[in-house]
Length: 214
Image 1 (spheres, rainbow, N blue to C red):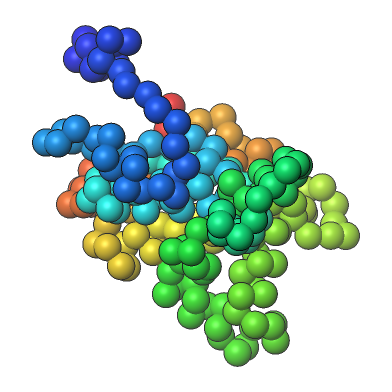
Image 2 (cartoon, helix red, strand yellow):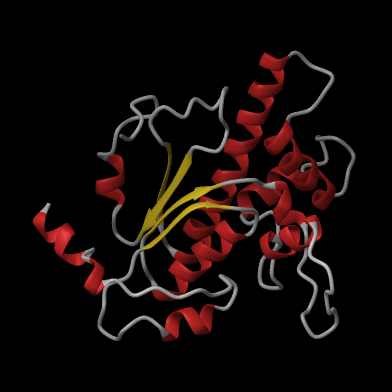
């Protein structure tokens, strides 16, 4: 629409680079009395959780499309205790790793499910670690079709865990959907996490599962 084009015109756009975990810096860049919505696309690992946390701090709605899940299992090293002279794969995992304010599972719902003693005899943290890895790469030995089914199922649980954390602890109305033409059995990174305050009716009226968003 003309209104959207006016809002997104180059002269009205302001950009800056920041670590998503630096909430205070990001919040300081938001002009007062402005409406906020947090949108993230393929924010890897815990970066999606940081984007959600930023939205919660602003009491703002969010639309998140997460990426890899296993990278969130890396805990960030405090910057004052580690000085890197080389940047390799571990640097990527550090950027996508969880900051001190993020713990997994995110929700009481999944914590309860994983804590159930009737499930495999493993520590809750280890069960979540396995879940996050299966969501990324599946579990073998299996056929490719079986592997993708396990990936899709595990990824859905991980994303529901994120959404329910926003719902349980912060009163958000939430919905899990998928981007159009992102078949979870072909490409598992097309989930859309949508949340906001007092938007239950709007979310209910969005397309049903299987009627993907265009």
